[in-house]
Image (cartoon, rainbow, N blue to C red; front, side):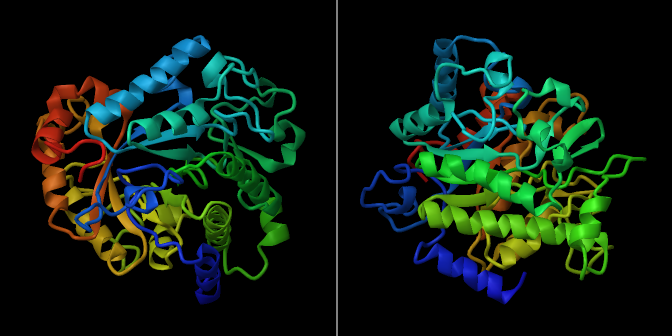
Length: 418
């Protein structure tokens, strides 16, 4: 990937200006503010104030599988109401948690998180409802897709009979007790692209959003068996790691280009692991001693920003200020420097779920820790906002940490405000 592919992306994007993914009207709603409320009346870019709404394993929504369509719809609109009441302006809804769908996809089965049975029609359209209801509340709706995770178990027989992973077992690698699509197969990348773009074509999404899962995180003593794919497609690469990174690069750039072609106002963002590389591995890396997305999940996140492939990036900076191995106060300026001068907007992922957790370091017992994060980030012009993990903790507000954030930083701002 180099200048030619970057130029190809720019041409595909046309004259669309990538910018903030924040308050205002949803994509396609029109209005004088242009792209989804990107610029307010003052001419200043609005800042991201978001929360993730996770569906995998029924973490946040639905509260349990098997609720009636009416009850599920009420829960979903309740989460959107909470976001608006909490002065947030963006909800990132997980709509493809495990190679399944929260919309009527012709390519993948209905998710079991809805009815308890994979492939069973829940009697309503969660994604379509979310897009419509978010717009009515002045919220942005970002559709969150997990690209390659097939199942959080290793038994193909538990998948619905016509699941693509059962029809194409050669696409699947079992690793760490879970099943994954193999990113090294061009046919896999093409299928996942088709499955995701179906949602882009159906709905005026404000953004397509990926999390941090590309190749799976390493599991001690186990090998991700992509020998056959590497033998067929790895020629010309110096090693397997380089080939794997090229597979993910190709996939990310392909999705970025296709989203803009189908719906130019829909943005594309990724929330990767918060460390690209440690300085001990690469002089361009951060002053950290942690896992590395470049080496462990084969995600060259710094490159994606510098090449301008993403509209936004939300590194998961899930550590406290002063944490020895990965200090929030060191990672923020590192990411701000990476984003400076690029077309990619930088938001920061915040670990609200750690607040008040007795298993976490002492800093997380301080109700002001997250508020300090936002104060620190405000000193860096490249940082354009924050996203909180996750919705359940926004509602529960452990030790009052989120209330402190709102009081210190969002007071007086509605869902459409700064």
